[in-house]
Image (tube, rainbow, N blue to C red; front, side, top):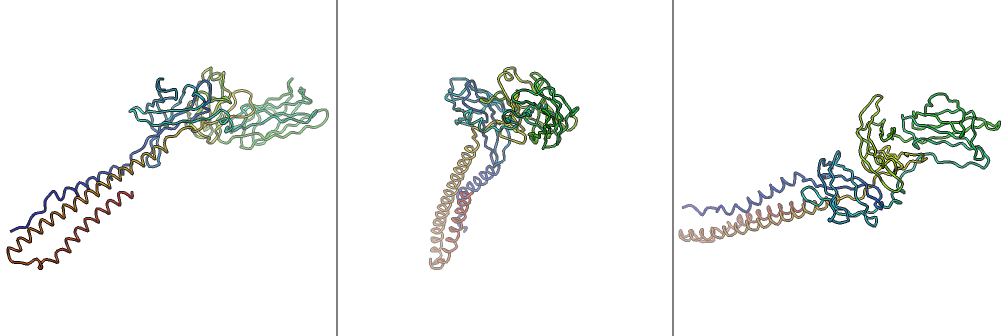
Length: 430
């Protein structure tokens, strides 16, 4: 006569626990990415509008990748009664962003995805004074000379030099505030090449204008002349920005060039109070290893803006970032876009919290499955024990003859308990 069979229901809880554990580990190993939004730009206290850029990225275990071609809805702090600004992410996940002027100079934004998920909700404030204070200023400032002495003034068109792009240099001679016209001067350069003759005569304004091509990252000009019978020897170090792009303006068209291999340059028009329109220009290699691209600016930009910011990156200072004057300003205004809002830290924290909750639920599930399995195993053993006792009594065997069988049973129960406990601890500690 055969003994009682192990019921199949006894195998269901551990099998379900193993299947759930395997499924959860498979899903977790895929490392589901989180999506986040960055907002960069200039001052938020503009009286007309806020301009900046927005980026959508996917983060998978610390590795970020841009999300291209996604439509985002940006709600400004005027409320949802106004239509949201719609943008579509382009190369590297970026898009230009133009919003109405924030009230009280404080920018509050909510960004929604196409499927209605909230990607960002936050506020930022950046005054034009703070923005201008962070901007780099490079170039040659005017040096006041001693009263009655001969004054030599060097002015670089575009404020600074970039290898190997030529720039116009204006040298002026004055004495007691009056221009020294018709004076012979000789100009020599170290680290650069002057086009044409090195000998010149000052014009009616007491100036000489020469075209200089920097060939090294340290360039200087030396002027030699004679004023009222006394020799004049003046030396000037010029400012060279390594890796800086250059541009040539032809009306509303701008030709951007870079000696550093780049396939794109980000640009933005600036005034000293606000950031203007911006965008990206694609570069292609031309002869001589120079990379070149073109874009057109709106007439409004050229009327109101004072600088053109060129950078290899869409935000923050990078190699050669430079705010070139569009007029006769002597210094650059290197005011790159500043990071104002970033939802990535919060998105990462939310993903971490969600994973912890999932692990906790999984651990509880496995623990409950283990307890149910132990309980069913114990009930099955008790039922089998009673059946065995009844059969032994029928054949005249006393219970003392099988006392040693309790040790294997206890070992089996403890093994199941510790196996499930180990699984729970491993889940909760991941």
